Amino acid sequence: MKCKLHKCRAKCCYNMPFEQNELVKYADKIVNPILYTEPIGIGVFAVTNIDMMQNKCPFLRSDYKCNIYDKRPSVCRKFGEIEELPCELLKK
Image 1 (cartoon, rainbow, N blue to C red):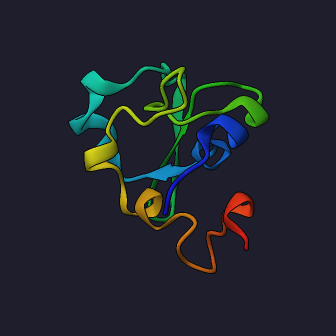
Image 2 (cartoon, rainbow, N blue to C red; image 1 turned 45 degrees about the vertical axis):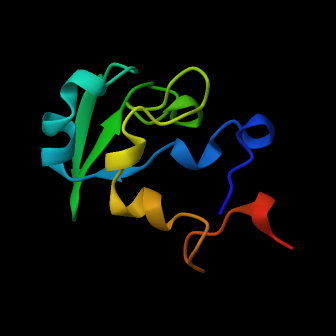
């Protein structure tokens, strides 16, 4: 899968869940400061902006690329490749 970041501006990288250890393990790679975290069933939800429409991943750089791409969470690896996490731009 080849992302088209220039078109979507990484919309899939907003409002994503994390395992708590991922935020701690890669804390030095965070580029969008976390205001607080909310516990959810499988981990935590990182809040970087009070406006949920602007709540981007803590690891999403200003060029819309992932700051931990080679170690990104499994939910990110699956995005666009499975039916439950479709990418609108990749539809044929």
